[in-house]
Image: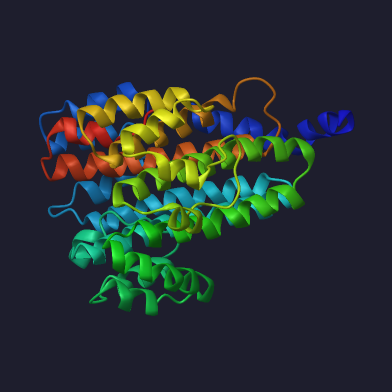
Length: 358
């Protein structure tokens, strides 16, 4: 281990310096608030154009008629460029792991597509909110959005592994009329794949930090799946089928979860775990507005906060790459939400509620 601590700074020196410089250019909570408080869309664009990321969007945002799909494509290109730069400076096995981690973006995009088809949202409207990592994937999402039903959508998914997982979840989807089983089946594939790579491919220092950030996502994901299952009235068998079959600090007991009579009681159970602080916030939010989507937002903010902490102390490891990619993705999501919100004159508080600060 001592030899690793000596060699890791050499492996990660340039990447560490590069990422720290990039983090310093990210928008702060204060920057977003200034943009939100502008009186007009044009003024918000002017402020956004003074930022590192926003400066490259000015031409698209000042057209006579703004195409939000083009804006999304531009933001996607920003992320892919950042991702490729990170991978270019990462050591070999870490690079392979990061390339697998990138699949999360496309799977999240596929979830959005599934929800859009389920809710009957028009293709042009849904594409404003779909994120993908390539033009090819975006084209597939556009094709899937033309499906007349979720069952048809699943049949037309090109990746055989994803299609197979979604097909297994279709009976639960049809019995609950909820996309939760389908979305959870995608998470199960991704996180199982990532966890296997962490355990088998990474060195001990990289493993510790990858476990922290990926394990955090797995635990919070499983917690949210349990809450959704409780809301849908699903039992322990369904929960065991839907959660990721591994854990970091939160080992779910499906039978114990099933005994909770409602979401509130389940949050009380989770309040006694390592995630008591985020659960406390979730409980308060749910009491004010019983919407699990609000809890998902809190989970994202917690992940962002923990990602930012990776830059404190010894930082010559894969954790800073994962943390930066998490934060960059949240920044681009925030920018997209602000642009759409200001362009379509959505109330400021509604925009603010979905932003993820760090």
